[in-house]
Image 1 (cartoon, rainbow, N blue to C red):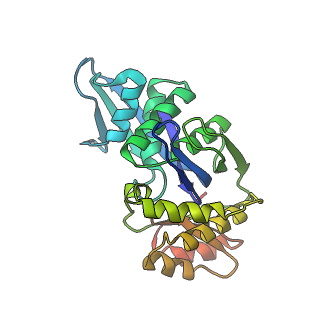
Image 2: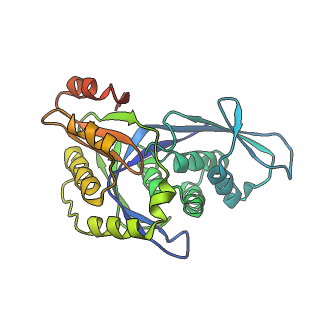
Length: 271
């Protein structure tokens, strides 16, 4: 069984390119200990379509199917079983994590799997930099982990930093469609303008989340419900949004107080 962790994107800039392997994002994020587990059964049905199974139900997941096709396992009659410990669409990079976990079950070469999963996400507009961030954390073998994506693309340069205090994550809302944002030229222009003016020189978890909050507010990637939740955060805590989703990530010296404040808005996870 293979595993790929989830990823919270705090800040990002969009880098478009005709080559999907060179397209991607730069920015800051946090790779989490929870994510996606995958097991694959070969039913010896060569030529038949691969199937994705979650909680004993066949589901459509074109990103996973495309990623394993790019690895050379398309239409092999494979049964791909996924267990997602974090919801898709809530800002945890689970689409990319699912593709990467499936690829790693078929090919233990992390670089090959990263390239295939990244290209699949780019083609289906479900993410830009999640796969690269997740891959860098897997290579490091440690999470939670702050990851800075310094150059875009499947072979983008990254740097990692330890998380120095407990994270509180509130799985909130119904999620949002990533492609609606990253495919919109007007959103891209706003996001890139804001990102270019961020100058993060500190990589402790409070500073990174604070940078995410500034990015969120200046880019306008926030709705009234999320603004209300952030306004309720106790004094002394730092919080931001998991992009492009509707969940909240926060840190505080008083984890119990912070958790109690957020639990009325969604499921609480502490890492």
